Image: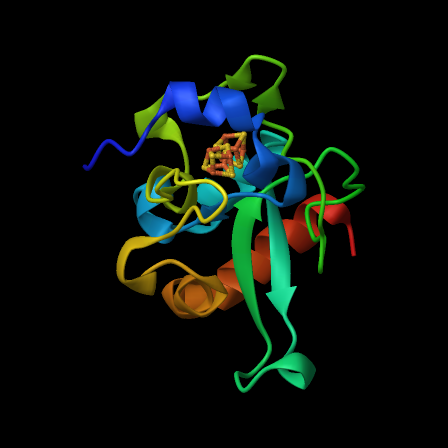
Length: 146
Ligand code: SF4
Ligand code: SF4
């Protein structure tokens, strides 16, 4: 795992990325994926399900998982923008290797922090979660009580 962490640079920035959206989570962040895994991570209060809307891009509508936002009312939180619940005034409360892939792979380079090779974005995140979309829906519905 490449260590992109740069505490000096990110402290000076104040966490603009973490204050604007949740970090993108990929299946490998949770290990083996099954219904119980997803229910447990959603119950932790740290993660949310978001939704990529086909009306605004070329892809079909699909779920993806990111960290939860402080103003979120439910696990299913489509189109959420805001501050990640894991951010504290001293920075991210997760150690680097426990952060979501979308956080670990962001290279601090303000004002143009970037993902190498554009490997991390909403499209690659949705594609990664595609095999689990029915499990994701069942898990968040059981908690949000839809
Ligand atoms: S990764 Fe970039 S935007 Fe995020 S806290 Fe660090 S410098 Fe700021
Ligand atoms: S998990 Fe940590 S690094 Fe990722 S968005 Fe939240 S506070 Fe920022």
